[in-house]
Image (cartoon, rainbow, N blue to C red; front, side, top):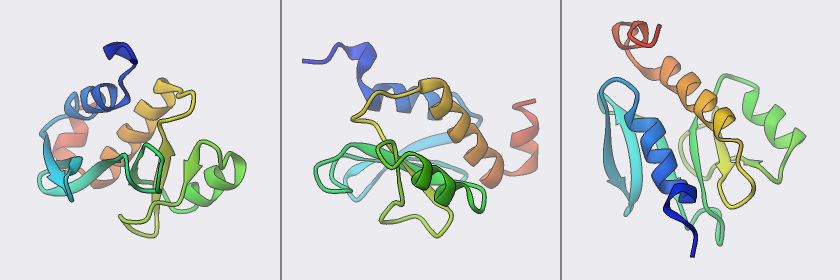
Length: 119
């Protein structure tokens, strides 16, 4: 059994909920986070089949670059949109990088007043 500190869902939840006005909800039975109703991060233990990961918005071109560069860590998610990035959590995870990806996604979708609170 994995110690709680290494629980990827717990760590992902903490990163998301640390951002201004992010709320948690269920999306098809799995945890997801949004800012003022706009999807930010979706966690999944079912998609892709047999894998654990999450997906979030990414700048244009970033998904293709990261998936091509490291397909063991990144994937094109089944949902979300064309410019969404999937990140596997069942491999060694760089949590600093995950935080950066989530903050970048937040900056893309959150209202300017909330983004200003990050700075």
